[in-house]
View: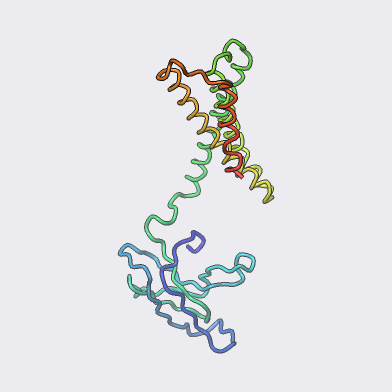
Length: 231
């Protein structure tokens, strides 16, 4: 299947007669193409040619008018084609093409969105709880947890919205979503690390560990460090 992006496993062979376009031949042209990759488990080689009209003029492999003969082996493929152009052999090497069916892909996508939705709901519940009760957010661990919950909530919301945003087919929106996903993912991991640092300071280095503007410095690291990286 040339649409599944299998691998090009042969040299590209060009056949032409002057500047004449040869196509729709009654007797197919027999072309033997040597493989550049040898693999004992290679199956179903596909004879293709380079079609300049595919992908909006950028070109792509096309199997129309070409078939692979059964006497092909692991060293070479014999192709029969009814036209002359640039030929090659595509093969599905074991483990290189996704074996997930469209049905399983939908199921996995559905599970992913459910998981992200649940995560977003509980992250929002945690954040609202700390906002509603002032006594809960007075100490440093609570403030760090609020920032971590905010990063997780934003990450899940952006991920849930990316499919809808992509449906507009606007390149700028896709770039913005990718940058936001990158940023909030890095921010989430950073706040997890900062929480670990705080636990180390609180439990291991207990004495003489006063840090001026403690949460402000954490916020600068947690939210500001990766702004440029995400862009």
